[in-house]
Length: 377
Figure 1 (cartoon, rainbow, N blue to C red):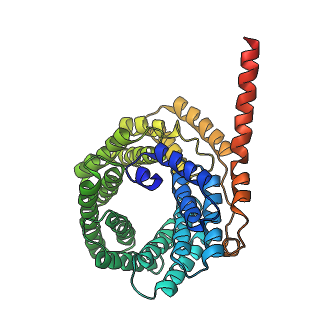
Figure 2 (tube, rainbow, N blue to C red):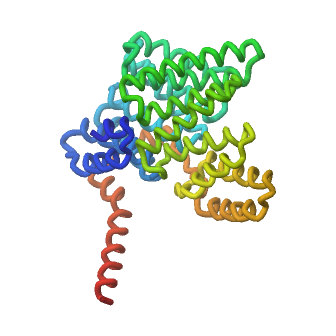
Figure 3 (cartoon, rainbow, N blue to C red):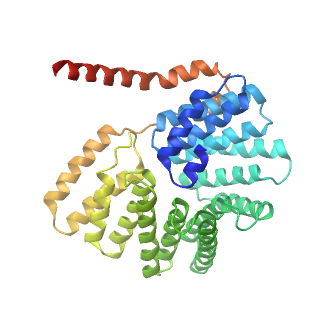
């Protein structure tokens, strides 16, 4: 249920169901335990609860290895969920190492082209992209392999096809940037074709207005901006923001990222007023708990745009806010290694005690504050 809620864009409902699954899981059912942990990774990641999402991701891999070994579908599933978390928030060399380990393990486990191997290729591609490792175009190879397998295994309108098309189109954008003029045009045309195919697929499955449709509109808008179809780019990026607003709270990370993308686009094409309006909304709702590069870039783009409008006083105010944001949102650089993921799992009840302790402490503080307030009355 948590997965379904997240797919349709109900992040709060997904979070609630994930919490319920974690707290009702019985240790006698290790398969349910691993599935609940994986659902938790996605739900907590969607809420920017990074440290808790990391705890869940590590625990999922350790529990899967302990109960099922390293040649089991649930171990592959747990690794793929860790890769998702790490690509979103860690973006370090260990992210790539673990993605490669996931691919090798999936190949050894299945020995043929299956969806899990395609997802593992996709994980390696995404890790290479976030590390901006473009030297030998391995990212493009893994994106191509991932999509090729998915096309063999899934019907065109399958709900999962957009994942592979989105990753492939993203990889093609980067390939275009690092290619000759002729290769650049061909890569972007193919990226546009794949993004349009993905948009049609998600619109069919999830409806014209949905989280997934909004995400594909954003990608297609970015591609149009690179082939100088600026009107189409603006229309699709605006749709992305609008659909996010209709589906999600304005301060959700999905909505903020869509606004950041459109705001940056407006800055680039010379619409400073529109850029300022959107970028302000992003930075005013950017209390994410850890440092995120794209939020930092939004601050810098906002400050630069205000300065270009000779609004230096307000630019200085946001410079102060940026300094405060950097103090409050430190770089989270704890490295999770393969060795840690391979460590023996502790009893699940012990993990949940540690996982919940901060929540219990906060509840106690709230209860105490409420009692003091009622006592004064």
